Length: 477
Image 1 (tube, rainbow, N blue to C red):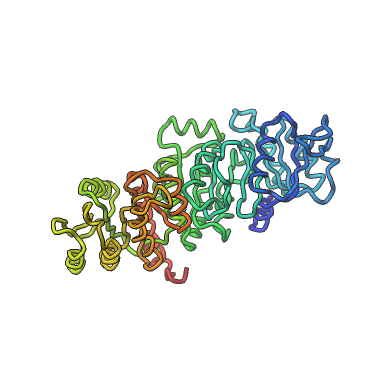
Image 2: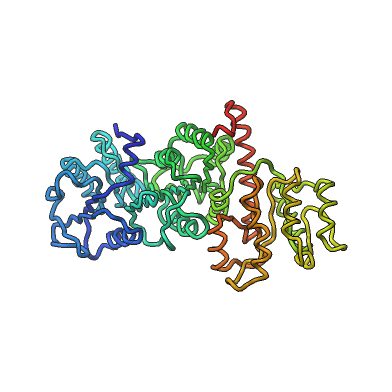
């Protein structure tokens, strides 16, 4: 039986001395491994094992596993062909190296022969308490601990530690997710790819992230659900900590099911059952990587709303109509403004403007009093989320944009109500950096943004039902 306790997983995901079996100068996987480590300034060491080399990529090489330094290696990466894997595992066991990443393919995803070989690997590791990730995966980045054992080469952007966890049963698809999350969110805590899951499963990684104090939001690319009972318990544990679970789950179509099975060697399962299960457990299911990134980015920076009433403040009647239609499509409530709100707004709106929700302040409405308009909306008891228009600044000298934006930026920390600006034009790099530095989420593309808002509103409603059923006060969480 393999120990999968919290402490064992913590050790697994934070190694310092890593042996790499099969490393060579012309092995792209090893090149990616040390390149990713350099990107986060990893302070550990790699020990390449290659019987025909004195050094690999400038690192001292060892001719066999038995020649590795004793008592120091706490992790091993295996990148040899599948038929040599069992022998490598036996030698690692002899040296007391029990945490292993197996990136090699040629196992359950290839058919009956591969499934038999994977079964033998699983049996050997289970009998010898070897915790194995893979086969057929890319490893992990534990940015919270400044450790990476990741062999993919497609994650773009700065590798920044943040509060979003990412689990990928598909390595390549999750690399796209990781790259986009790096741009849209505060960064990642742990990014783990699980591949065929001979031993370490997505559910195990989910459990680690729920217990990890660095993680506020958990995202996943799921091709199959292997342990539904465990998933139910973990979803409840996540709800207790107010950690949203945001999943892409492939397999709605027959073609999608076949693709998942051919990739991981696991059955994708009945999608109708998965859909019902997610709804019951409060798991947010999204349809695309873009929707996942937008939703996770919103959750990562914003507190949950106390209700579902949305107020919109923009400068165009046409946009009011567009946003109202999106709210209708995604089931978002646009409540009428209270009478005192309407009366108070008249002092700051042009005579021809109508105090309504959505609110069109018109182009003339920006000549003064925009901050006061937002304060009036914030004080409306029908509204729990305010979407003020923002003008992404082009740079420091874009005074008009800064004047408009300062209205909501100055109010963001003064209220429990959510302020999520919606952009009037495309975001600039300067604007992204400015808003992120202030901890502000924003909506740049209305379709995805309103979907994300609807997920947040429904999740907040789910948590209220959950805590009422469990008898736990939200204030106690």
